[in-house]
Length: 233
Image 1 (cartoon, rainbow, N blue to C red):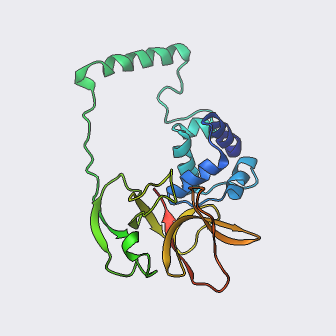
Image 2: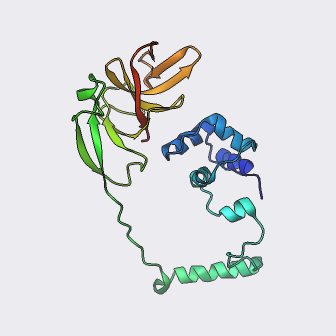
Image 3: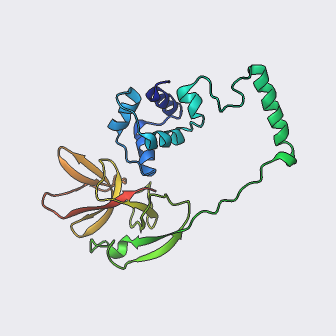
């Protein structure tokens, strides 16, 4: 079996993704992963679990998992015992079948489930710090365009998170009371609700705006600070 980490690294570099990019994509799929943890997969010091492995294959576009990670004879491959000429003939015949309407597969229309999520309005409720517990929301129908990990939505106020998030834009949130350093979330601090990037270092804890015209907000010791959730859109 080929080294999983080497394969991940090769595909990642070919796609020009950084390790942080991969972690962001995993987190967006509901699999929070820190760069330090991901790095151990590539070095071979640890291996991902089944859920993490399959998510990585999806992110990297690895579709033939057997041949990529195991190799050798695959009994389920109908062309496994054919030589190159035989494989070419089989592929040519498949192309002929595809060109005939008689053998074309009928597209199956999959009805996407509709979910009802609460959409909160931060400008209305930010001052209370309890906007997830009050009535300042509307119920909205959402489809597959909203991540499955989303539990509720928030309408952003202001330009502090530009250019990634615009004023009045809706972002979707996975409810959690704990975030990793570098993640974007919805926070309550001293009577106000914020959509910010979390920064934790030796100097303290800060809420960071993506728009550099805004100064970081330092979380004072002993203050009221709460995490509402992780931005997944």
